[in-house]
Length: 81
Image (cartoon, rainbow, N blue to C red; front, side, top):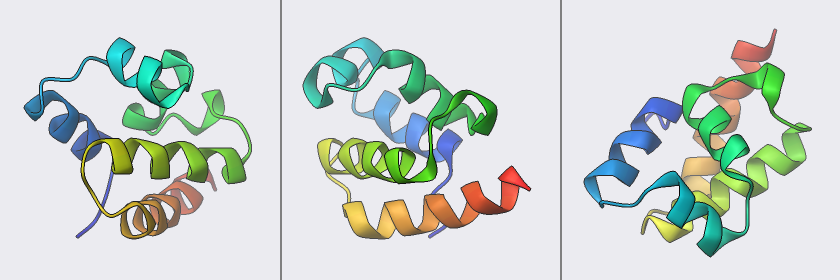
């Protein structure tokens, strides 16, 4: 599967979790969670941090963190150029 920001947002919403709640649980600024869902590279920190955040989001949503992070980062790197 191609794990994109909008797709992660759909899953989060389907599970009924707000950005604020997710932020509290995984201790990531809601600003970054929004930027990840929007794939807004300009407002995200270095890729190593983004990967960590995506892994934490995936884990909290009951997904496989490595698969989601690998896929998301592939897209992220493509979109960044």
